Structure formats: C-alpha cells, structure tokens
Image (tube, rainbow, N blue to C red; front, top):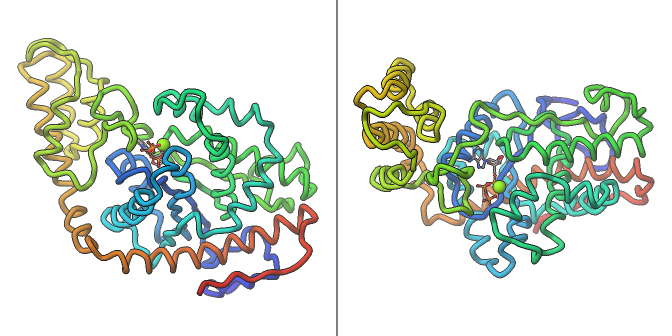
Length: 371
Ligand code: ATP
Ligand code: MG
C-alpha cells in the first residue's frame, strides 16, 4: 500500500499492511487518575522515542475505568482529558501518534465478545495481575463481572491494531501473555495456522493476528513512595508530573528505608536507590552515592532524597510548563481525541472485517461515520 494511502474499509488487506507502512504499536492507560513517574519511566518514555519509527496508537481505556469506579462517570471523563494533557506534557505528539478513547471504538467491544469465547474462564482468573489488583485494591469477592472481563478486553484493545509491540510496565506482562494466547488460538481455529507454527510466523502463514511482544523498559516497576508497592494511581504512593518541588520532596521524605544513621552501611538495592539510578542522570554521581551508601560513609538518607527530588524536578519542569499550555482548554483536547479515534477506527474496522471474515461472520460490509 502507498505509505500515506487511506486504508479502504471493505477490502481486507494483508495483515502486515499499515497506514504509514511502519510497524504498529499499541499501548495506553486507564483513566483512574493523573499519570505519574511510574508511567513515564515504565511506558510513556518509550512511546515518545518510538513516534518516528512506528505507527503509534495510544488508548485511553475509559471503559476499563468503570471496573472499579462505576459510580464516578464524571470523574472518569475528567481523568480522560487529564491523561491527554499528561501525554502532551511528556512529549507525545498527537499529529504523529493517535490518542483515542476506548469507548469510541466499537470493534474493540465486538472483538472482546469473540475473544471471551476463546479463553477458558479459569485461565482468565489465574492471571496474576488480576489477582494482585483484587488484593491491593481491596476488591474482595465483590468485584463486578466486568472486572475480570477487562483482562479479555485488553487482549482486544491490543489485537484490534495488529501491533508488533506493546511497550508496558512489568505488571502488564501477564496481560500480554494472555493476548498472545488469544492471537495464536484465533489464528489456529479460524485461519488454518498450524499449532506447530512459531509465533513470528503467524501473520506470514495467514493468521489475522501477529503474536505481539511486550516491551518492558529498563524500569519495569518503579516502586511507590511507600517503599513497598508499585507506584500506582490508585494506591496514593505516586509522584505526579504536576507535583511541585516541595511536594516531591515531601513525598520522598516518606520513603522508609529502615536505615538508622549516616554511618550505617545501606542497601543499594532498596527503593531509594532505584530512584537514584532512575532519575540522577550523572553516572559518576550515582556511582559515588552507591559507594558512600554501601560503606556508611557519612551520608544520610535525607540528603540523598533531596538530590533525587532535585533531579526529578529538573526532569518535570519542562513537562509542567508544556502542560500549562493546555490547562482549561477542553476543546483542544477533545479535538485531539476525535481525530485519534477516527484514525483508530480506520484500523480497527479493517481488523474486525478480517476477523469476522475468518470466523465466518462476514455477512455484510459496514462503514462507521462520526457526526
Ligand atoms: P491503576 O492503579 O489504576 O491500575 P496504574 O498506576 O497501575 O493504575 P495503569 O493505567 O494500570 O496504571 O498502567 C498504565 C501503564 O503504565 C502500564 O503499561 C503499566 O505497566 C505502566 N505502569 C504503571 N505503573 C507503573 C510503575 N510503577 N512502574 C512501571 N510502569 C508502570
Ligand atoms: Mg494498573
């Protein structure tokens, strides 16, 4: 296909065709609050780097936010807009990358239903990330039917784009594994791909879905300021990109290491040193801090925390400034989402047509229109 050609909606193209001719990636976030440092180092930084070499789609998974906040629709809507502001602040360029709303992509909902049939119920419930979320978010056994369904939905979020790669934090790897299983199963059941085929060969052998790979960056799991759990929007242990230097310093001050004095040898694998290695960019300084800390050479946790806070503040300053340009301007943000959703629908409608055809559900062509 010509690099800039529009995909035609009714003719299923070969599975590796993209709008721009570049390999595709898909990833995104649930609007459960603003984005934090964990998102940046775990996923968004990589997305920013891939914008030129890849055709990028970033999903705001707003339907999935309803799994835990069904009584807060207005807050979810607000968080969608805030996350777009965070993306723009972190360097995502909406001209190159499509930022879109999950709720505006009907193909995702349709594929979710189809994929739910391919996965044994107990296989979904065994997903360690789901189990962990049920525990840390105190959901007990009162979670909705939709809660575990979101794990199936996420396989559809991803496969609807037939991407080659999914840049995510470590906690998402089990979800990507589930996605890979769905892709293999679908291709075997409906596209005649042998169960002996290697993952990398699935699309070449006629599978609708390439078997996508998780890409976990250098910091796959940034610990929160509680020093224990993953930094998470829902756990009140996050440093947000809008935080001021004072707030950053205060939050880091709470990070407990258990070390008693400046002369006690410290553990350079603790949470504080994950921050040192992640945010202090001068490698010599990092090495010196590690040496002094391990030796208990007159260096206090408080001092290191201030140095880390300064490094984080330097990184965030240009982001906070960019973000201010979009504050209060919902129209611009909604325009970005409208444009991104239209681009996402162009791809996902194509995927859906291919998947329906393969599963003998291809009765008619259809065309979606936005008013
Ligand atoms: P929630 O508490 O609502 O689950 P979250 O903070 O875990 O929110 P998600 O929307 O679930 O954020 O995750 C979005 C992306 O950011 C995923 O790829 C996830 O792996 C990554 N991510 C989130 N938190 C971290 C973290 N602390 N370290 C590294 N990556 C992270
Ligand atoms: Mg999460």
